[in-house]
Amino acid sequence: MHNLETLGWKNEFNVDQENVARILTVQKNSFRASDGELDYQAHLSGRFLNESTSPLDFPAVGDWVEVQKLSEERKAVIKRVLPRASQFVRQAAGERTDPQIVAANIDIAFIVNSLNHDLNVRRIERYILLAYDSGAMPIVLLTKKDQASEDEIEEAISSVKEVAIGVPILAISSLTGDGIEELMNHLTTGKTGALLGSSGVGKSTLINAIVGYEVQETKGIREDDSKGRHTTTHREMFMLPNGAMLIDTPGMREIQLWDGESAMETTFQDVEVLEKECRFSDCAHKTEPGCRIQEALGTGELSEERYASYLKLQREIAFEKRKQNQKAKLEEKSKWKKISKQQKDSYKYRAR
Ligand SMILES: Nc1nc2c(ncn2[C@@H]2O[C@H](COP(=O)(O)OP(=O)(O)OP(=O)(O)O)[C@@H](O)[C@H]2O)c(=O)[nH]1
Ligand SMILES: [Zn+2]
Image (cartoon, rainbow, N blue to C red; front, side, top):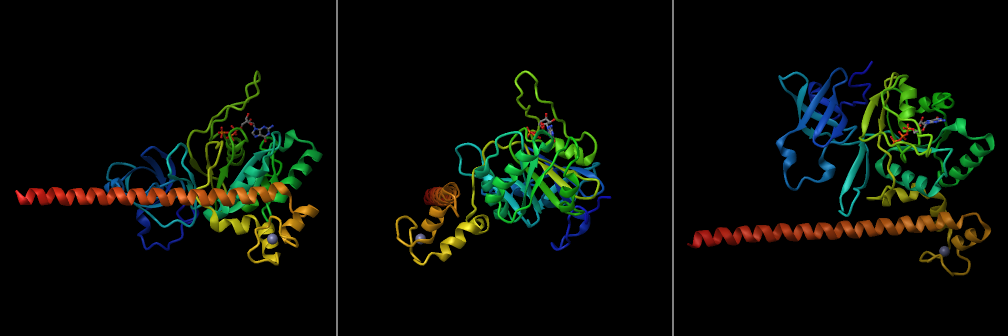
């Protein structure tokens, strides 16, 4: 069923097909890759160990890589990462200013939320922004449909609709199979999807339901405290029976933006249209009489929360950008310091 084509391979990189594989899992510096027929245990070639290699240059789940297969059975060396069609990037956890690739070459970013917990539309908004920024199409999945009433489902869908303009919203249940067929209409042969969302929303259970058997270990909710157990610990790509791929990711509690500037327009189409309609080209949209944004806020056409969220994300992106520029400057400085020290040292040596 799976060969390079069904894995989504498009032969546009000018690499011999023999030497192409797709990354299925990453654990530290150990990779599992598939050429569509066989799995390979792969490791990085020396060129990745260069000091200046950015985290974005390393292979991630979903990447197409050029490999050199070794004579040792099912071992390979990764020579390079082929250009990505899309990459889902977030700010790495912790204090550092580093990007982290959640998944590469994703066609559809499934933003997964559970119907039996509080829906956080602000978080969904953020994920949609990241999805568009990555180059993937977002789809919002509302899981555990079997645990919500018709009214609750309708209410959830309508509140998500307000922040997910033009984005498909599907309510599904992995328990009853309700809605899975509709989901699979999107995830067709050769397509790659990624499941993104908090821990316990049912990502692994969904993969099991699609694959039809237990591929991802899931643990039941403990009855005593009804907390979902954290189960997924690393990203992994699964091949589905229909020839599509689905990437499971560990639950992400917070997702910090890395970039997203270019995706703001698509994510906040409603706000941007109003801004363009404003007759003052340099309007701060605060107190100007006759301002279109103020008018829309007044009539409720645009909700205060949505507008506040728009401004907040805009500020956040600008802040990240400044931080990244600052970091780049510091790195440049330390590089020149090093070079000038080397030059001095070599001069001292020659002078002696
Ligand atoms: N009733 C019901 N329960 C579900 C459904 N899907 C998942 N669950 C339950 O929700 C709990 C968490 O599901 P998981 O699939 O482990 O959640 P996850 O999103 O993979 O969580 P992490 O791996 O921690 O990121 C488990 O107890 C599942 O049985 C569903 O459609 N209906
Ligand atoms: Zn205005």
